[in-house]
Length: 123
Image (cartoon, rainbow, N blue to C red; front, side):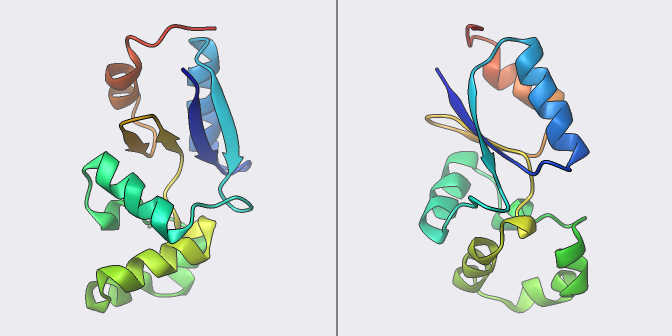
């Protein structure tokens, strides 16, 4: 099984997550979240598979999030507006995103990744 992993090349958390996958011999397709970011329909599927609230998909520590004052704006936005905003710029999306056939993990929490990928055979 191969996973899609959306990352940003300068993100230290992404580097840590990729090393974690490499150390376990887990296959993945690397996607640059800035250049190849998910569209609105894909983000909707990711949110559904993750079981998380939409706000968890925002990169709240990112420069663009802060520059645009999104912490104040998001509560007044509809879900459709939030999806459109996320789809407009991959740098607004929390990373890494690990996409499996029936799940999506947002951010890198080693315990979550270990639990979800414990039965995945290495290379």
